[in-house]
Length: 62
Image (cartoon, rainbow, N blue to C red; front, side):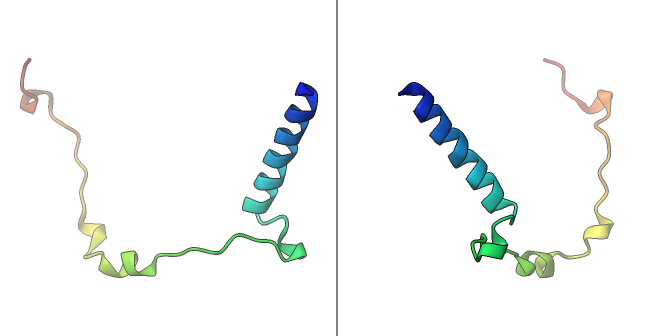
């Protein structure tokens, strides 16, 4: 009984993985393609963003 349960869970995982990767698209079963173009449009000059390392002197001592 436990072997059957493990086998069913394994098959369910393989089927879910195949579905999420689009392998079942030929059968007409594919996840919806999701995009968020409005997030890209909301960005204001992202190329001006500068990430600098934290200086050891600026970190407060504990």
